[in-house]
Image 1 (spheres, helix red, strand yellow):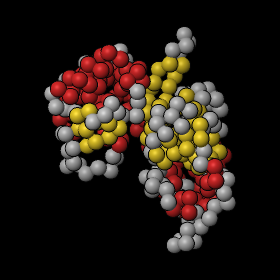
Image 2 (cartoon, helix red, strand yellow):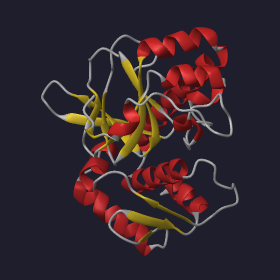
Image 3 (tube, rainbow, N blue to C red):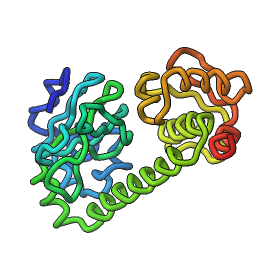
Image 4 (tube, rainbow, N blue to C red):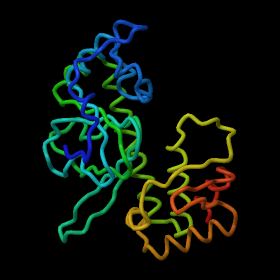
Length: 255
C-alpha cells in the first residue's frame, strides 16, 4: 500500500492495553470509528488479536490504497477522511465510480481481486490488516459477516442511485445530489431535525465533474446557481454551508 506518510510508531508497536479495560488495546479504545465499523462486532479478545496484525497510518491525498485488478490481500478500515474509487477505461481515461467514508472498509469484499483502484481524496487515517486475519474472524463472528454484507448492499444501492442520476437528472439536480450525499456522510449520526450543516467538499472541481458526468464549467455554473438561490453558501472554495438540508434534497429531486 502506498501511503504517502505513515504514523510510523503506531504501525508496528506491540498492542498496549487500556488502563480502564485490560482487555482492549489502547489503539482500539481511542478509535472514533470502532463502534460504527466492523470492529464494533468484535469482543475485546478478538480486537486484541486483530490489533497484532494491524498497521495504523495516515495516507496523503492522491496516494493509492489499492490498485485495480491487484490481489485483494489486505483491507483498510477508514478511520477518518474520504477515499475515491475509480475505474481505468481501455483508452486510458479514468472514471470515478464511488466514494468511501469512515468507517467503510476499503478492498474487494468476498472476492479475490480488486474491481477498482482506491485513492485518498483527502488525508485519510486507516487501520490496515491482511485478508487472512479478517477471514479468520468472519468464521468466528457471524455478525461481522452480516456487517460486511450490509456495506456491500449499501454500496450497491448507492451505485444504482448514481445510475439513475447520470441517466435522468439535470445538471442542477446532479450537483445538488452530490452535495446532499456528501452532507449526509459528513455527519452520519446527525439529528433528523437538524437543518444547517457545514462540511468540506472532498473532491476537486475536476473530480466532481468526472463523478457527475459533467464539464468543469457546468459544475461551476451549478455551484453559482445554488448559491444565488440560497441553497448553499460557499465559505471557501471547498467549505460549504447548507442552510436547509431538506431544501437541498428537494432540489436534488426536482431541480
